[in-house]
Amino acid sequence: TKRNPLAAGLTIATVRGFLLNFGVYYAVKDAIGAPFGWSPKVSFIARFMTAFATVIAVTKDLPDIEGDKAYNISTLATKLGVSKIANGATVCLLLNYIHAILTGVLSKAGTFNVIPMVGGHAALAVMLLTRFKSLEPEKLASIKTYYKHIWDLFYLEYFLYTLI
Image (spheres, helix red, strand yellow):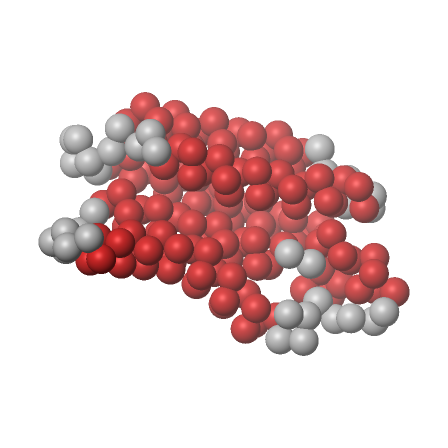
């Protein structure tokens, strides 16, 4: 919520990042009686999506910035501005993609399907940078488009996960 942004951010990152990926996977395995076995792919997606969900938690107020300013609601976006939030979010996501690419390159052979792990994340990183370059921080429509693109990348990651 806007009244407690730290709690909101932690909730978003924990639920969308960790619990949804790691927790549900292992809960289902337990429910069907499958033995516990550490999965590098589940570990990767939980780490990757927790970092991604943290970025979503930080950028969630960007589309509301005009209303927040009009009603004197203090958010990270109103305090720091669209440019700083978008720059920081893009850098964090880019580092997350670099982490994914390096994970694919440096992991033991056969752990991941290298082409989608490396190539897919490189393509999503390029998409991120291309969309970031089109951001016009003074235009609300552009801010909303930038934020929507973050969600597009979030869901594209789940598609990519089926291939890695």
